[in-house]
Image (cartoon, rainbow, N blue to C red; front, side, top):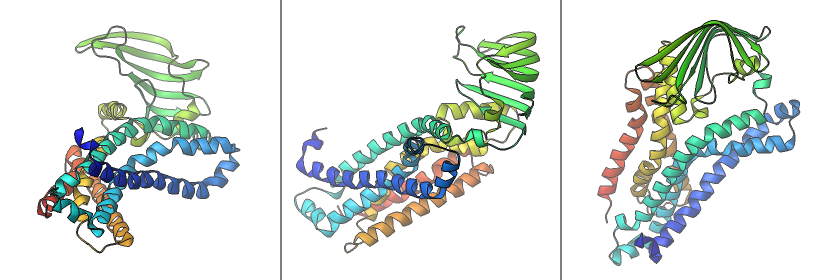
Length: 362
Protein backbone atom coordinates (compact mmCIF):
# COMPACT_ATOMS: atom_id res chain seq x y z
CA UNK A 1 0.00 0.00 0.00
CA UNK A 2 3.00 2.33 -0.13
CA UNK A 3 1.86 3.76 -3.47
CA UNK A 4 -1.18 5.26 -1.71
CA UNK A 5 1.20 7.56 0.19
CA UNK A 6 2.61 9.14 -2.97
CA UNK A 7 1.28 12.63 -3.77
CA UNK A 8 0.53 11.83 -7.44
CA UNK A 9 -1.45 8.70 -6.54
CA UNK A 10 -3.42 10.59 -3.90
CA UNK A 11 -4.17 13.29 -6.46
CA UNK A 12 -5.37 10.79 -9.09
CA UNK A 13 -7.57 8.80 -6.70
CA UNK A 14 -8.89 12.04 -5.20
CA UNK A 15 -10.02 13.43 -8.57
CA UNK A 16 -11.52 10.07 -9.52
CA UNK A 17 -13.33 9.68 -6.18
CA UNK A 18 -14.98 13.12 -6.38
CA UNK A 19 -16.56 12.29 -9.73
CA UNK A 20 -17.43 8.73 -8.65
CA UNK A 21 -19.27 9.86 -5.51
CA UNK A 22 -21.09 12.64 -7.35
CA UNK A 23 -22.33 10.20 -10.00
CA UNK A 24 -23.15 7.27 -7.72
CA UNK A 25 -25.23 9.49 -5.42
CA UNK A 26 -26.58 11.87 -8.07
CA UNK A 27 -28.17 9.26 -10.33
CA UNK A 28 -30.28 7.65 -7.55
CA UNK A 29 -31.38 11.14 -6.50
CA UNK A 30 -32.58 11.90 -10.04
CA UNK A 31 -34.40 8.54 -10.21
CA UNK A 32 -36.04 9.28 -6.85
CA UNK A 33 -37.28 12.70 -8.01
CA UNK A 34 -38.81 11.30 -11.21
CA UNK A 35 -40.41 8.35 -9.39
CA UNK A 36 -41.83 10.57 -6.66
CA UNK A 37 -43.30 12.92 -9.26
CA UNK A 38 -45.02 10.01 -11.04
CA UNK A 39 -46.33 8.22 -7.92
CA UNK A 40 -46.99 10.90 -5.30
CA UNK A 41 -50.76 10.82 -5.96
CA UNK A 42 -50.85 7.04 -5.50
CA UNK A 43 -49.01 7.23 -2.18
CA UNK A 44 -51.23 10.01 -0.88
CA UNK A 45 -54.35 8.04 -1.86
CA UNK A 46 -53.03 5.24 0.33
CA UNK A 47 -52.83 7.74 3.22
CA UNK A 48 -49.08 7.23 3.57
CA UNK A 49 -47.40 9.74 5.84
CA UNK A 50 -44.60 11.97 4.48
CA UNK A 51 -42.21 10.16 6.85
CA UNK A 52 -43.16 6.74 5.41
CA UNK A 53 -42.74 8.00 1.84
CA UNK A 54 -39.34 9.51 2.63
CA UNK A 55 -38.16 6.34 4.41
CA UNK A 56 -39.33 4.15 1.52
CA UNK A 57 -37.14 6.11 -0.89
CA UNK A 58 -34.24 5.97 1.53
CA UNK A 59 -34.54 2.17 1.65
CA UNK A 60 -34.69 2.04 -2.16
CA UNK A 61 -31.23 3.64 -2.53
CA UNK A 62 -29.20 0.36 -2.32
CA UNK A 63 -31.17 -1.20 -5.18
CA UNK A 64 -30.72 1.94 -7.32
CA UNK A 65 -27.01 2.13 -6.61
CA UNK A 66 -26.44 -1.54 -7.49
CA UNK A 67 -26.91 -0.82 -11.21
CA UNK A 68 -25.52 2.72 -11.03
CA UNK A 69 -22.06 1.95 -9.61
CA UNK A 70 -20.60 0.45 -12.83
CA UNK A 71 -21.79 3.54 -14.73
CA UNK A 72 -20.34 5.75 -11.97
CA UNK A 73 -16.97 4.01 -12.38
CA UNK A 74 -17.09 4.68 -16.14
CA UNK A 75 -18.02 8.36 -15.68
CA UNK A 76 -15.29 8.86 -13.07
CA UNK A 77 -12.68 7.12 -15.24
CA UNK A 78 -13.56 8.97 -18.45
CA UNK A 79 -13.84 12.41 -16.86
CA UNK A 80 -10.74 12.16 -14.64
CA UNK A 81 -8.43 10.75 -17.34
CA UNK A 82 -9.98 13.11 -19.89
CA UNK A 83 -9.09 16.05 -17.65
CA UNK A 84 -5.55 14.73 -17.13
CA UNK A 85 -5.21 14.51 -20.93
CA UNK A 86 -6.58 17.98 -21.68
CA UNK A 87 -4.32 19.68 -19.15
CA UNK A 88 -1.24 17.70 -20.27
CA UNK A 89 -0.87 16.10 -16.84
CA UNK A 90 -0.43 12.69 -18.45
CA UNK A 91 2.38 14.07 -20.62
CA UNK A 92 4.02 15.58 -17.54
CA UNK A 93 3.82 12.23 -15.75
CA UNK A 94 5.35 10.45 -18.75
CA UNK A 95 8.16 13.01 -18.86
CA UNK A 96 8.88 12.16 -15.22
CA UNK A 97 9.20 8.48 -16.08
CA UNK A 98 5.68 7.43 -14.95
CA UNK A 99 3.87 5.31 -17.54
CA UNK A 100 0.18 5.61 -18.34
CA UNK A 101 -0.42 2.18 -16.81
CA UNK A 102 1.25 3.21 -13.57
CA UNK A 103 -0.58 6.54 -13.50
CA UNK A 104 -3.99 4.84 -13.75
CA UNK A 105 -3.23 2.22 -11.09
CA UNK A 106 -5.09 4.19 -8.35
CA UNK A 107 -8.16 4.29 -10.62
CA UNK A 108 -8.17 0.50 -10.89
CA UNK A 109 -7.82 0.33 -7.11
CA UNK A 110 -10.92 2.55 -6.84
CA UNK A 111 -12.76 0.30 -9.31
CA UNK A 112 -11.85 -2.71 -7.15
CA UNK A 113 -13.34 -0.97 -4.09
CA UNK A 114 -16.46 -0.21 -6.15
CA UNK A 115 -16.68 -3.92 -7.04
CA UNK A 116 -16.76 -4.80 -3.34
CA UNK A 117 -19.38 -2.12 -2.70
CA UNK A 118 -21.59 -3.48 -5.49
CA UNK A 119 -21.33 -7.04 -4.14
CA UNK A 120 -22.38 -5.78 -0.70
CA UNK A 121 -25.27 -3.76 -2.13
CA UNK A 122 -26.48 -6.84 -4.02
CA UNK A 123 -26.93 -8.67 -0.71
CA UNK A 124 -28.35 -5.69 1.20
CA UNK A 125 -30.83 -4.61 -1.49
CA UNK A 126 -33.30 -7.53 -1.04
CA UNK A 127 -33.80 -6.61 2.63
CA UNK A 128 -34.21 -2.90 1.92
CA UNK A 129 -36.55 -3.62 -1.02
CA UNK A 130 -38.77 -5.62 1.33
CA UNK A 131 -38.84 -2.71 3.75
CA UNK A 132 -39.66 -0.32 0.90
CA UNK A 133 -42.61 -2.48 -0.17
CA UNK A 134 -43.81 -2.66 3.44
CA UNK A 135 -43.66 1.12 3.91
CA UNK A 136 -45.57 1.68 0.65
CA UNK A 137 -48.14 -1.01 1.60
CA UNK A 138 -47.79 -2.71 -1.76
CA UNK A 139 -49.24 -6.08 -0.69
CA UNK A 140 -52.27 -4.47 0.94
CA UNK A 141 -53.39 -3.04 -2.39
CA UNK A 142 -52.87 -6.21 -4.43
CA UNK A 143 -56.01 -7.02 -6.39
CA UNK A 144 -57.52 -10.42 -7.11
CA UNK A 145 -59.09 -13.23 -5.13
CA UNK A 146 -57.51 -16.43 -6.49
CA UNK A 147 -54.09 -17.57 -7.59
CA UNK A 148 -53.14 -20.81 -9.33
CA UNK A 149 -49.95 -22.91 -9.60
CA UNK A 150 -47.55 -20.47 -7.98
CA UNK A 151 -44.30 -20.51 -6.03
CA UNK A 152 -43.64 -18.06 -3.20
CA UNK A 153 -40.17 -17.38 -1.76
CA UNK A 154 -40.59 -16.64 1.96
CA UNK A 155 -38.20 -15.76 4.76
CA UNK A 156 -36.04 -18.19 6.77
CA UNK A 157 -35.02 -20.19 3.68
CA UNK A 158 -38.60 -21.31 3.04
CA UNK A 159 -40.37 -21.80 -0.32
CA UNK A 160 -44.10 -22.41 -0.73
CA UNK A 161 -45.78 -24.06 -3.72
CA UNK A 162 -49.53 -24.39 -4.17
CA UNK A 163 -51.95 -25.31 -6.92
CA UNK A 164 -54.72 -22.99 -5.65
CA UNK A 165 -55.04 -20.04 -3.25
CA UNK A 166 -58.42 -18.50 -2.45
CA UNK A 167 -58.21 -15.30 -0.41
CA UNK A 168 -61.90 -15.04 0.45
CA UNK A 169 -61.95 -18.54 1.95
CA UNK A 170 -58.37 -18.27 3.33
CA UNK A 171 -57.79 -21.67 1.74
CA UNK A 172 -55.11 -23.45 -0.32
CA UNK A 173 -54.97 -26.75 -2.21
CA UNK A 174 -51.96 -28.83 -3.18
CA UNK A 175 -49.68 -27.04 -0.72
CA UNK A 176 -45.97 -27.84 -0.33
CA UNK A 177 -43.57 -26.12 2.06
CA UNK A 178 -39.80 -26.60 1.75
CA UNK A 179 -37.35 -25.34 4.36
CA UNK A 180 -33.63 -25.50 3.60
CA UNK A 181 -31.65 -26.37 6.70
CA UNK A 182 -27.98 -26.85 7.49
CA UNK A 183 -26.33 -29.88 5.97
CA UNK A 184 -25.62 -32.77 8.33
CA UNK A 185 -27.40 -30.96 11.18
CA UNK A 186 -29.96 -32.75 13.33
CA UNK A 187 -30.72 -29.46 15.15
CA UNK A 188 -31.71 -27.53 12.01
CA UNK A 189 -32.52 -30.06 9.27
CA UNK A 190 -34.18 -29.51 5.92
CA UNK A 191 -37.78 -30.59 5.64
CA UNK A 192 -40.62 -30.77 3.12
CA UNK A 193 -44.27 -30.63 4.13
CA UNK A 194 -46.87 -31.55 1.53
CA UNK A 195 -50.61 -31.53 2.18
CA UNK A 196 -53.84 -31.89 0.26
CA UNK A 197 -55.25 -28.62 1.62
CA UNK A 198 -54.58 -25.87 4.15
CA UNK A 199 -56.60 -23.16 5.89
CA UNK A 200 -55.36 -19.93 7.47
CA UNK A 201 -55.95 -19.92 11.24
CA UNK A 202 -54.70 -17.71 14.09
CA UNK A 203 -51.03 -18.57 14.50
CA UNK A 204 -50.32 -20.05 11.08
CA UNK A 205 -51.72 -22.40 8.42
CA UNK A 206 -53.55 -25.61 9.39
CA UNK A 207 -52.70 -28.35 6.89
CA UNK A 208 -54.69 -31.53 6.44
CA UNK A 209 -53.96 -34.95 4.98
CA UNK A 210 -50.25 -34.73 4.26
CA UNK A 211 -46.70 -35.95 4.78
CA UNK A 212 -43.70 -34.45 6.55
CA UNK A 213 -40.25 -35.40 5.26
CA UNK A 214 -37.35 -34.52 7.58
CA UNK A 215 -33.95 -34.59 5.80
CA UNK A 216 -31.13 -34.18 8.34
CA UNK A 217 -28.40 -35.05 5.79
CA UNK A 218 -27.62 -36.44 2.35
CA UNK A 219 -29.26 -39.82 1.86
CA UNK A 220 -31.31 -39.56 5.08
CA UNK A 221 -35.07 -39.10 4.99
CA UNK A 222 -37.55 -39.63 7.81
CA UNK A 223 -41.21 -39.42 6.76
CA UNK A 224 -44.32 -38.91 8.92
CA UNK A 225 -47.92 -39.12 7.79
CA UNK A 226 -50.34 -36.68 9.46
CA UNK A 227 -54.04 -35.92 9.48
CA UNK A 228 -53.58 -32.29 10.55
CA UNK A 229 -50.60 -30.02 11.22
CA UNK A 230 -50.28 -26.31 12.01
CA UNK A 231 -47.22 -24.58 10.53
CA UNK A 232 -46.65 -21.65 12.90
CA UNK A 233 -43.66 -20.43 10.88
CA UNK A 234 -45.89 -19.91 7.85
CA UNK A 235 -47.24 -16.56 9.04
CA UNK A 236 -47.99 -14.99 5.63
CA UNK A 237 -51.66 -14.08 5.24
CA UNK A 238 -53.67 -15.03 2.12
CA UNK A 239 -53.45 -11.41 0.92
CA UNK A 240 -49.66 -11.44 1.28
CA UNK A 241 -49.45 -14.70 -0.67
CA UNK A 242 -51.46 -13.07 -3.46
CA UNK A 243 -48.56 -10.69 -4.03
CA UNK A 244 -46.33 -11.44 -6.96
CA UNK A 245 -43.42 -13.74 -6.28
CA UNK A 246 -40.23 -12.02 -5.29
CA UNK A 247 -38.28 -10.60 -8.17
CA UNK A 248 -34.65 -11.72 -8.51
CA UNK A 249 -33.60 -8.25 -7.28
CA UNK A 250 -35.52 -8.91 -4.06
CA UNK A 251 -33.52 -12.06 -3.28
CA UNK A 252 -29.88 -12.51 -2.37
CA UNK A 253 -27.55 -14.82 -4.28
CA UNK A 254 -28.06 -17.79 -1.93
CA UNK A 255 -31.82 -17.28 -1.54
CA UNK A 256 -32.29 -17.03 -5.30
CA UNK A 257 -30.35 -20.28 -5.70
CA UNK A 258 -32.74 -22.06 -3.33
CA UNK A 259 -35.72 -20.58 -5.15
CA UNK A 260 -34.37 -21.83 -8.49
CA UNK A 261 -33.84 -25.32 -7.05
CA UNK A 262 -37.44 -25.42 -5.79
CA UNK A 263 -38.77 -24.36 -9.20
CA UNK A 264 -36.61 -26.94 -10.97
CA UNK A 265 -38.17 -29.69 -8.84
CA UNK A 266 -41.58 -28.62 -10.09
CA UNK A 267 -40.41 -28.74 -13.72
CA UNK A 268 -40.40 -24.97 -14.32
CA UNK A 269 -38.09 -23.27 -16.81
CA UNK A 270 -35.53 -21.38 -14.71
CA UNK A 271 -33.01 -20.24 -17.35
CA UNK A 272 -33.90 -16.56 -16.97
CA UNK A 273 -33.62 -16.79 -13.18
CA UNK A 274 -30.25 -18.51 -13.48
CA UNK A 275 -29.03 -15.66 -15.69
CA UNK A 276 -30.26 -13.17 -13.08
CA UNK A 277 -28.41 -15.10 -10.38
CA UNK A 278 -25.17 -15.11 -12.37
CA UNK A 279 -25.56 -11.37 -12.99
CA UNK A 280 -25.44 -10.77 -9.23
CA UNK A 281 -21.74 -11.63 -9.52
CA UNK A 282 -21.10 -10.44 -13.07
CA UNK A 283 -22.42 -6.89 -12.58
CA UNK A 284 -20.08 -6.08 -9.64
CA UNK A 285 -17.10 -7.33 -11.68
CA UNK A 286 -18.28 -4.96 -14.40
CA UNK A 287 -16.81 -2.13 -12.30
CA UNK A 288 -13.31 -3.47 -13.00
CA UNK A 289 -14.04 -4.28 -16.66
CA UNK A 290 -15.55 -0.87 -17.35
CA UNK A 291 -12.51 0.87 -15.83
CA UNK A 292 -10.25 -1.26 -18.01
CA UNK A 293 -12.31 -0.27 -21.05
CA UNK A 294 -12.79 3.40 -20.12
CA UNK A 295 -9.20 4.31 -19.25
CA UNK A 296 -7.75 4.04 -22.80
CA UNK A 297 -11.03 5.25 -24.30
CA UNK A 298 -10.76 8.57 -22.41
CA UNK A 299 -7.45 9.38 -24.11
CA UNK A 300 -8.87 9.05 -27.62
CA UNK A 301 -9.85 12.73 -27.91
CA UNK A 302 -7.36 15.27 -26.58
CA UNK A 303 -9.71 18.17 -27.16
CA UNK A 304 -12.83 16.61 -25.74
CA UNK A 305 -14.65 18.59 -23.11
CA UNK A 306 -17.52 17.87 -20.76
CA UNK A 307 -19.95 17.18 -23.61
CA UNK A 308 -17.58 14.63 -25.10
CA UNK A 309 -17.13 12.90 -21.75
CA UNK A 310 -20.86 12.76 -21.09
CA UNK A 311 -21.60 11.45 -24.58
CA UNK A 312 -18.83 8.87 -24.40
CA UNK A 313 -19.91 7.63 -20.98
CA UNK A 314 -23.62 7.50 -21.75
CA UNK A 315 -23.02 5.85 -25.12
CA UNK A 316 -20.81 3.15 -23.61
CA UNK A 317 -23.28 2.57 -20.75
CA UNK A 318 -26.23 2.22 -23.14
CA UNK A 319 -24.32 -0.19 -25.38
CA UNK A 320 -23.28 -2.25 -22.37
CA UNK A 321 -26.86 -2.44 -21.04
CA UNK A 322 -28.16 -3.43 -24.49
CA UNK A 323 -25.59 -6.22 -24.69
CA UNK A 324 -26.62 -7.43 -21.21
CA UNK A 325 -30.30 -7.54 -22.23
CA UNK A 326 -29.48 -9.35 -25.49
CA UNK A 327 -27.34 -12.00 -23.82
CA UNK A 328 -29.93 -12.35 -21.04
CA UNK A 329 -32.61 -13.09 -23.64
CA UNK A 330 -30.30 -15.56 -25.40
CA UNK A 331 -29.52 -17.27 -22.10
CA UNK A 332 -33.21 -17.39 -21.16
CA UNK A 333 -33.98 -19.24 -24.40
CA UNK A 334 -31.22 -21.77 -23.74
CA UNK A 335 -29.07 -20.80 -26.73
CA UNK A 336 -26.21 -20.11 -24.30
CA UNK A 337 -25.79 -21.45 -20.80
CA UNK A 338 -27.10 -18.93 -18.24
CA UNK A 339 -23.63 -18.43 -16.77
CA UNK A 340 -22.07 -17.80 -20.18
CA UNK A 341 -24.89 -15.38 -21.09
CA UNK A 342 -24.33 -13.37 -17.88
CA UNK A 343 -20.56 -13.15 -18.30
CA UNK A 344 -20.38 -12.58 -22.08
CA UNK A 345 -20.67 -8.73 -21.87
CA UNK A 346 -17.78 -8.64 -19.39
CA UNK A 347 -15.75 -10.96 -21.59
CA UNK A 348 -16.34 -8.86 -24.74
CA UNK A 349 -15.66 -5.50 -23.10
CA UNK A 350 -12.72 -6.95 -21.16
CA UNK A 351 -10.99 -8.23 -24.30
CA UNK A 352 -11.60 -4.95 -26.15
CA UNK A 353 -10.36 -3.00 -23.13
CA UNK A 354 -7.15 -5.02 -22.89
CA UNK A 355 -6.43 -4.50 -26.60
CA UNK A 356 -7.03 -0.76 -26.26
CA UNK A 357 -4.92 -0.57 -23.11
CA UNK A 358 -2.03 -2.32 -24.84
CA UNK A 359 -2.19 0.17 -27.72
CA UNK A 360 -2.05 3.26 -25.48
CA UNK A 361 1.27 5.08 -25.70
CA UNK A 362 2.82 4.65 -22.28
